[in-house]
Image 1 (cartoon, helix red, strand yellow):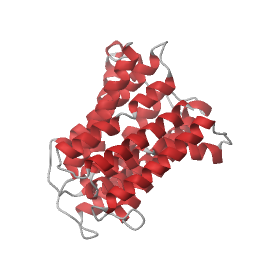
Image 2 (cartoon, one colour):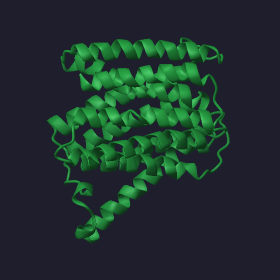
Image 3 (cartoon, one colour):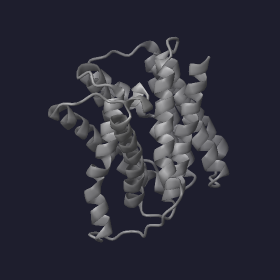
Amino acid sequence: MPWIVASLVSAFFLGFYDLSKKHALRDNAVLPVLFLSTVCGAAVWLVLLLAGLAVPAAVPAAFVPEALTPAQHGLVFLKSVIVAASWAFTYFGIKHLPLSLGSPIRATGPLWTLCGALVVLGERPSWLENAGILLTLASFYGLSVAGRSEGIHFHRNKWVGCMIAGTLFGAVSGLYDKYLLGTVRLSAAAVQAWFTLYLPVVLLPLFVGWWLRWWPRNEFHWRWSIPFIAFSLLIADYVYFDALRHPDALVSLVSSLRRGSVLVAFAGGLFLFGEVNSRQKFLAVLGVLTGIVLTILG
């Protein structure tokens, strides 16, 4: 089934997205990496939009956003602010934590989105969702035990706090996507194109502050992995939307398969970056992944 293959391809590129971030951030300044990677992503969408205006037939319909009102642009700009906060926290966390710990923490995002839906939207979890929540929380505790052996105490490590804060902002972004796509009825192309273009604008003040040394900072080194952060995410999202467009595609299964990205990032952390405690972390990662799948399928 092509949509299953597309889901797995999307998962691979999401895992590659995490690996690219880790490579770009090692012994490097966070803010310029974050800003320049968003500039690369915005440049791709800018080219698509300009090509669509010049030669409409040259751009697939999936990449052609509808015209937005000023109010709708404001709503999408707010999404860019939320995503910028999520990515800023996450980038700092990924720089200072082993990827085999940071990526599974980030993968718990659907759990927090579900919790937000319970509180904000009044949804009620099924027994599968409850089982997924409990298993994810138990596995999260297992990750904390594995981290303790590396001197990383989850309850007082500020970089773990950054990963959790970034994940929570990501959950807010997921809930806000439901509002933009479901209530406001914006297309996926409009949301993705404009929030990607607004992201460098939102992050520009932070980059300028880093550039002008308004605070003590690390030095920046350009790496090839910086544009790959943007490109791998764009490919992952495109293939994901392509999978969802297939008439036989099951949304819950597509979303579950995409969680497999954590296995790609976990393996890359062990083999490419020499991270340790593989067996203990692997069991916890499988627990997180299974819990998220149960949550999505529920």
